[in-house]
Length: 89
Image (cartoon, rainbow, N blue to C red):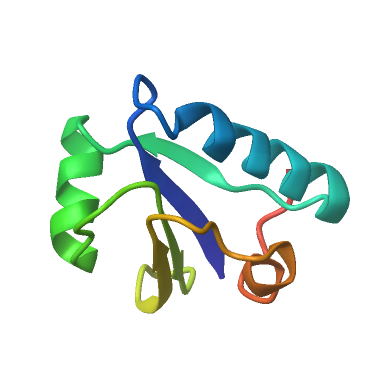
């Protein structure tokens, strides 16, 4: 499984979201793919997974099937995200 983060890099929540991802990766050794929600790919993924607010963390199977989503604040716990993230840095 993998976890992606859909967010706006120039928003008020960008810094805290990026810090969370850095801390998650440091603690677990697993990666979170960061995607600008306003990019063509971000728009496509937001529509596909029903993302209505940002930042949003979406866990999917390796073939893209939806597993779980956390959106807005508060951010998910590192342990919650870790349960779904298999992708190594």
